Length: 331
Image (cartoon, rainbow, N blue to C red; front, top):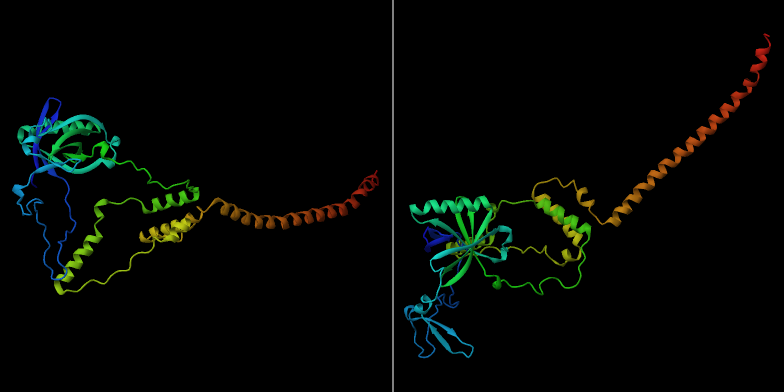
């Protein structure tokens, strides 16, 4: 891995010599522009507008276009003469919690390496201090002709730096949110929660670029025999029906997620229970009616049994009146 920048980390009065490495790489497939008639490469040439002559890169400088269209030449010496303390220094200005950094600000990522044996001790000191404080360092640095904002944090055993956009480079999301008042029912939120729980977590290391693999397969096929891959039917599951019947779409999504995970779909009651409350109340009423019907015969049978008992008791009371006469006979 080649370093792209050498400098120092300024940590108070401590200076740490470091090397800067790119922490990411681009795997996207790039295409060349060609002439469709004969397949010839299309190239761009740099031509001066005044004399219509092609110029080499060594003859090209910088210039700022003013409001009236005039060009103000700016040389490398002009830029080198500007007071830029961070020209070769990553100057730490503060330590803040990671949660205070808006992810929208995060840009290119870099690894910082200690440059030489003497830098190992102060480098390790800063790394351990960041890890123990559970904070990140906010720094200013200059790279590729401009001053930038950076965030230093610990990744495994190294210090990583994320380039940050300046706060005024973040656009406000005005006019982006849906217009008007949109009401979301509790039942819909419950189903959304169920879908989130069903999908669960994922190991990011298992995710890959399916489109890039398809492009690579297409290129390999056309390179071997000039054939093309059979086109696949696009997934039309994201149509208007899902927007119109949101509950059905959520329920189907839960079932699909469970099916993809090999879960038993017989437990659909978990989804059914989350239907709107009105339907749930109707279900309860329907269930309660049979219960009343069942109790009614029991009450009648109890009444009949009571009457039967009462009759039998009345019938047995007749001989009870003759009992005193039997007692007087021996006397």
